[in-house]
Length: 230
Image (cartoon, rainbow, N blue to C red):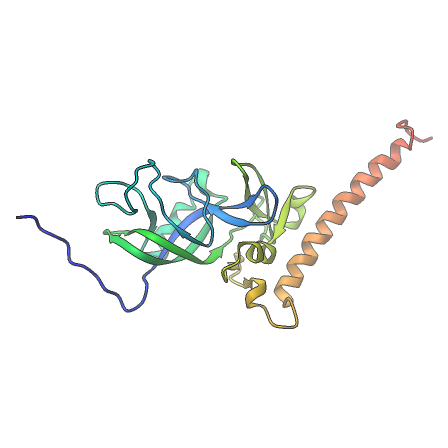
């Protein structure tokens, strides 16, 4: 006789936590995430369905396969993963587990998810991040992003935290390390962006202006003909 695990019928979808790298599409019109382990080669959006990473035709998650989205029950367990060197630039995601799922001791493996909140850590220099900038790696068609402060953005491709939330859509919230939520345009007040968003946008703009002024100053030293002015 074959034993079957009990079926759960929750009144509300479960909540889970995971880490991922934010990504920007090649044309700069979409935001999403890519995982840090199994399935990391397949970026996903805020609302997404899982598929078998091995190319098999069964529905994810399958009991005899590793496919499906993965998350843990405990937020602290997901935050602990950010301590490893290869995951320092990842962000913490709070997700709603949708569709079929398999429950394990530490988390879920499931068919569909909605990313509700992305918590962005500090810049690599230790300063609070106000933007997500080009991380110098990516996937085909997608550019990986990493937390960045105004001083480290410089001329790199970047988005403010609020800007990334707007591109990702589906009501995603981006939360800075300080815990101040930066909502997407769909959640903003009717009159436009709020104070946190405007402060982040201003800091990012100032960093870019400083970088351009430095470049113009260097060009001025050499003069229009390429030689140094006397």
